[in-house]
Image (cartoon, rainbow, N blue to C red; front, side):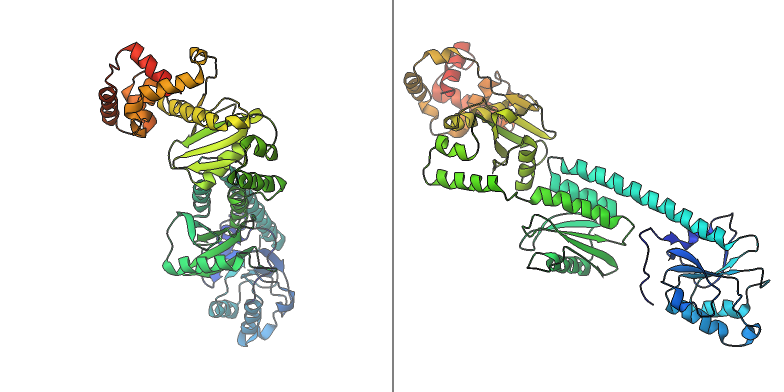
Length: 487
């Protein structure tokens, strides 16, 4: 049976048409399949309708073409065989005005060829049946558009989360009722979400992803297949980096391709690196820094002006490169670095974050010239520690002039080095003491800021007091230590 040349409208379940009480249609032969669908209704009184069918039709006939002796011959067998060969989905026979009942030989032929046979009562016109089919198509089309629109909105919202790629995959898998997989340039599975599929389907999906992976001119951008009773689809992501989106679902529902295409576009933006003049300038700046260039000399390639450093940490999970890239895009800067559990972003001062980013804690430095990037990096780190300790979504470095500025930098540095010498070999103790003092001696908030247990904080602070031989309950001691720790 040929594939029907279906129109750009959703198919109509045959059961939905039979359920229309105003039509009073009744199936009297052929298999009763809830999944059976029709794509349109067509009326013909031709003895051989094959040349006029495209496939997928509900063919309506009043039996005008039936000869008087058809009941005793092979006429109906040939007639039904031709409909099935043309891909007809069902046959509707009108009881009036030519025939009072549906011929028994036609019922037998439809049973033999497994073609659903629908009895159309005298009060129901063929035009009424066709109109009902188009009404059901319009309803199905509206439902499909609503489903696609809702999916687009949910996918866009998922792409704005701190973990955009896993969120988009989860939302896509939920919308298609299956599994969504992101494959990397080497063909490995980077992330996945949704229902697990059988090994056969999983392997077939990975092979299908290779089909659309860019390999030269003529490579398709999408492909579909079926394996182990599962519908498979693969989409090459448009960034040209070799990423592929794979989708496995129990069946292909109307709108699935559009929904998956929207997800592919979003994932292309999330995984892609913009290749442009600015990208070349960033690469050149990096090379010059590695070869010994000074920041103030290199910064002209990135754009003139002052800068702020932003330290960010997600609320729920460890950041990955894709989430960091998405944060950089939200902050308006491609200069992003993932260092352990913190994302650092170098942002032009005019784009300094004006509002928190959902799902992230941000620490923002003062605006500095390029030669002050290292100092700004320290400021942002301290601001982030305060943000996490106070559970604030965004904390800025306070750059007001202080009494410490009255002391010569060399003298202040020498004093700090001498005072903190007993802790010089333990960065953990120095960091703990600095954070504890900045949070006014709060054990709980210091534990949160350092991601350690509060007892660990107590032990470290006690050790600091012992090594320094200082009373940390004395405000003068605390003030002097804070002054030293800031140098």
